[in-house]
Length: 292
Image (tube, rainbow, N blue to C red; front, top):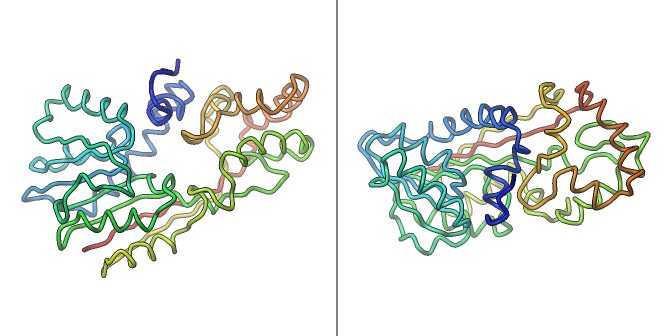
């Protein structure tokens, strides 16, 4: 069950991104641990230091840093007080509170953190939610000490969106295209593909943002994949997983957009395709690191 007392960020991070499915949760975390490790691989804290994890979420990168760098301190920063409280509870359980600081702040306003006060800054899938991306990069640069390292991961959602009218979540919905359009309209109204922060940038923009902020040494690696989806993912997981905190899951979107008869027709067409893995997934990801 989703905790309705939590904000949308905590609800999604702790439940809705898995659809309440423990198997999907494991699959997601198995994907994210290597992402965490790759982000942290650009940082060297042999002699200690302070890392600022912006948009820390459930603490994936922050706790990874505490484990990897035994002498470092970590600032957990997020716009969600619920997620900061969650991370603080985990830090107590792990007996690392003496190395942790928790600050509620957005990526484009880190005014609670002093100029040139940290040796490293990390983010993971944070800037996709921020409209003022250049301002965010300026803030990340400001708080870094000279020679400090910025290391980030961002999905490049432009690679897969917008989908052709005959595709929905990578599945061929040509036989029920008019019904699919109604479901798509729910998502498009919430996150227009031509202007939403999740879709209005690519890897070239990330480089430009970093350079405009002041970084003189910048590196970016991008991976792009077109492949079949995870065949181990079941229909119930697809139905109840929300793609991000700001949108409904498929079940909710269908209930909003479709009549009961249309829902039945849409499910009758889509469910067999999901269960047979009959989709094409398009995903691109960018890792950027820069030195101040």
